[in-house]
Image (cartoon, rainbow over all chains, first blue to last red; front, side):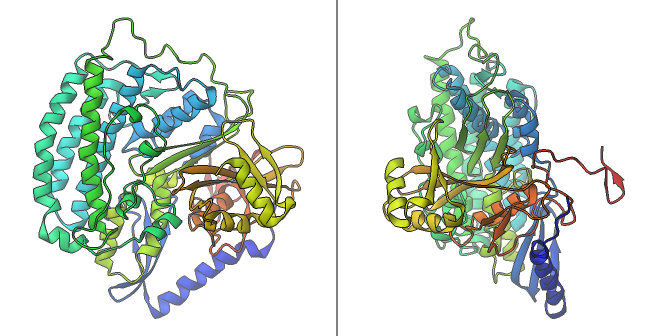
Length: 400
Length: 165
């Protein structure tokens, strides 16, 4: 099959011409794919006029593995390890979303034991803290502050250690399964987790003193990269990015899935304390506030898990696992609040096999990154780095 | 606004031909829309104060691989003020082994989210979107042959002289 129509080539030719023209009049600057401040293998092609960025053209796909194709050739259980590799900094959230979608299609989402639901929320929130710690730490490094990075990684390592204890691996857990969990939490996990929360709370105060209220940091981030709310919605931004623009939109509250309706937490939004609503500092601050809320959620989960949902010798986290995962023929789109925003999976099933006919993953980073060309028109190159860092994307999820 | 109200609203505005069918068997009902009207329907659903579907959650290209070799696009809209969700579907048959790509209207002018999602559908499934501002491949290299998510796609043996295993 040969595709012949010349109109399919038009956009590519137009792009080539634009680059050729720009290299005569302006300067083309490539940032990445091996640049540390692009947080992975992202290449940004900048058309610059001196220090001013006229246009940014992101090039993605260096990490593309075609998750959709994998999911269409493997059974649901076999796909879970691949979902871990989407947003590899918050793997638990990915598998939670995927598993919830399959369970709802199977009609077993109401049968999941409460203890399993609470363990899922607990590990997801721990993972969210770990992901936000990386976002904050690497953002500091982008701006030029080295110490917060080391502090964040030191504290994140405690979470990694705990989750490794529970699941057996450090970053890619494959812990949440359809209908249950890989294993129950190890004996003593709740106590160790509580110790961590007690240890971590004063560390957050220290971090705030070091970075959040730092005058140099504020000067670099306040009033930079202001994202108005209507633009954010139109570009499909979600998660901390959307909340920083001033909208209380958190799918944990909107959809009330899993154990979240029974848990009390607040939704931090950007208030423009240092500059305008929706600037880089607001996006950073929303993540810091979310860590505090996640700690609250973790504490409430631990309370329940140590009291009324205490482990019993005969508790089997795999009891509700279906023998054969064959959902009825239907389409289903599941969305949930990942660490970076709205994480969605679209399934099409034929009702006959354990393998879906079409799966599409909607990564939050993919949509959050697509607003970058709009955000960075006419900014300085140094500010562009601040903007890129504040978006907090993971290339594993952008490229899928 | 319920599913049936939205159906009624669309038929009143655009006539009966706009909705070609519906799927209500699954957990999420879907409206099948006439492919030529999709941009106008999306614009109406976004701007109408009764619906306000202002957030495009996801846009997925689909190759159905049935007798007619249908291609389609599925839109998942969400309304932030009303906290509702809606699924729209368009599809049209496509001749096998054709040298043309299946064509649909782009909704980039309504939702900027669709920009990259449509590029992805073009890249992986070979669906052409009319009036898209910049329809280049996004995830695969520009010189890639074929569309990997089409059913029946076979890997090329070589890519630039490198054997693919």
